[in-house]
Length: 190
Image 1 (cartoon, helix red, strand yellow):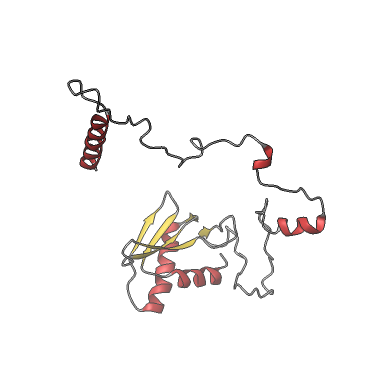
Image 2: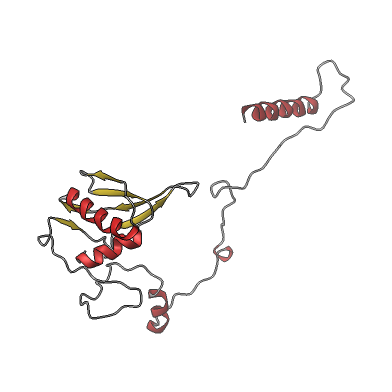
């Protein structure tokens, strides 16, 4: 990149030197002077400013509530609405509300602010290594790791490697076990 900049500067200097008449040359041969080499309009600050209001886009302000309801659908929620808290309601997304209390078990997995289970799949750049992350763990994280690995190992019939970050409240499991972990959390009521 540096070589490219140097060669660009060298060619620019050559163009400017050829445009100026040399001191010893005859004055009859005058090359045209280059007043402006490049004009750039790529940023907002360097572009020309509108001075007349007629140049701006026309708009109209509406106070009709029937039109405003279509705009409200596009706006973000100021407060995330609470989902139904009863288990007898079957939702098409498969969502199940949390039923467990923090005192029910020696550990507790808190839901996210969107009321979802904090279980994530992380894939590396080459899509070879997959790990499952469980966040927002409170209480005895070692017991939760033991119970969770026991459940997954019974299903897969394979040993599962895990990594525990006690102070962060995070467990990382090797492999893609997101659906199994979420199913186990549903059974526990998290």
